[in-house]
Image (tube, rainbow, N blue to C red; front, top):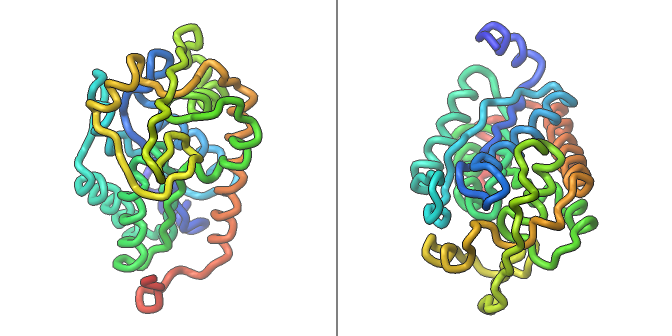
Length: 258
C-alpha cells in the first residue's frame, strides 16, 4: 500500500491487527517462522472479512529457551515490549485507535504483551487487546485433539500449519517426543493444563527434554483439525473487530486505568 491508500483506509476503519510472533526452532518437521506464519494468516482472513487494517508482522520475540537449536533468535523482554508498543503508538499518529496484538508465540510472551496492552490503553488513549491464538481457537482445539499433551510444535501447531501452509510441513520427519511426567505441583506442560503459577524453561532444560526441538506428538496432527482451529480463531477475532467498529474513539481522559 502507498501512504495515500493507508490514509483512505483509515477513514473507513480505525482498527489494526498486528501479528506478533518469533523466529525459533520448531522441530525437524516445521520451519523457524511458524509463530509468525500462523497469526499473520489468521489475521489476513480477519482483515478480509472485516476490512480492518493489517500491519506487517513482528518477526522476533522472546525465545531464550529455544537458543539450543540453530536459527532461533531472541530479544530481551524490555526490548520486545518497547518495540511493539512503539509500532502501535506510531500507528495512532495517523488514525489507528484500536489495535489487536495477534500473538502466535502464545504462553511464552503473554506477560510482555499484557504489559504493552496496558501501556497503550492507559498512557496512549488506545483500545488495545492481546489476542493469544491459544485462547481464540481453544474450543476447536479441545474438540479435535487426540493427544494428551500439546506443548511445542506438536499437535496444535502442526495441525494449524497443515491447514495454512501444508507445503512447509514435513510430516515424514515428525517425531513424537514424550513430555516429562515430573511436572511440579501447580504446573503443567500442556497448553491447556492446570497451570496456576507462572514458570519458564531454560534452553538447557529444553535441550535435555527434546532432541528434535518439539515436545508432544505432531504425528497425530491433521489438516482437518487445523482448519477447525483456524475457523474458530477467525470467527472469535472477527467478533471483537466488529464490536470495536461500533464504538466511539477512545478518550485519553476517560480511559479506564484498571
